[in-house]
Amino acid sequence: MAFKTINGNVVHYELIGEAKAKNLIVFSNGLGTDFRIWLPLFDELGDDVSVLLYDSRGHGLSGGADKPFGMADLVSDLAGLCDELGIRKATFCGLSVGGLVCQGLWQERPDLFRKLILCDTAPRIGTAEIWAERIAGIEKNGLESAADSSMARWFTPAFHEDRADELAGYRVMMMRQSLSGYLSTCAALRDTDFSDVLPTITVPTLFVVGDQDGSTPPATVEAGSKLVPGARFEVIDDCAHIPSVEQPEALADLIQGFMRKQVN
Ligand SMILES: O=C(O)CC1=CCC(=O)O1
View 1 (tube, rainbow, N blue to C red):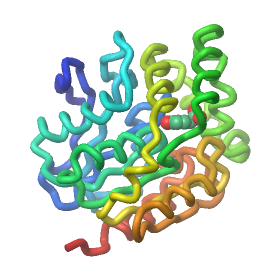
View 2: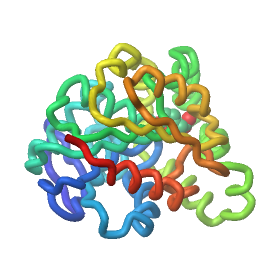
View 3: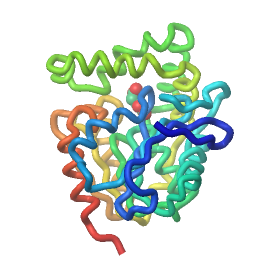
């Protein structure tokens, strides 16, 4: 457990391995989650990679939820954390809004990138109306009112049936997030469209999506992948929005294969 103050807010992170390692992967979490969503993946990735995990602003043990924030802040936090830890280059892997943060980081700091892995994400997620509705609903009825629909998007019916304890745990994870941090992140999603950024990406890029993803369905993710020159697109079977939890072995296989491919 480690903390740094970045942009005036505390950021919770964990660096496993070396900041300067060639095989460093930096993971960015999705809305309503914290960096623990990546932990099941590590049992599968083993010692093959060095890893930086962090909780995005207003999530997990990271601060900054006391004031409204947007995508530029989320991107600046990640850039600041990398600089503070002496990371010169890494592979960035983002889930959902974490994938948007990685796209924004490419726009601001392409020098940091070796490769890019975009999980269950797109240049634009949902529509402004959908996010405005979600914000209004939660402001009126609380985060709890969004929990069941979120779990239905995050995990397949089979996961709901066979892995009830984990489902209950991830529901608690969502409920434990700061309300204002969750709402600011929804506003960041409402206001972000990186469609013009994706065609500028010049590092090797892998897009991954669960076949039953209810938040960023395969067709949406595939359309995003077509905007990135030479990007690979892969679908994970029997999986919804969070492959690192639902199908960690399949995600690890894809990541390991992608990391092994030589660059430059
Ligand atoms: O719909 C959800 O709650 C899932 C999600 C959308 C953006 C994100 O980061 O997670």
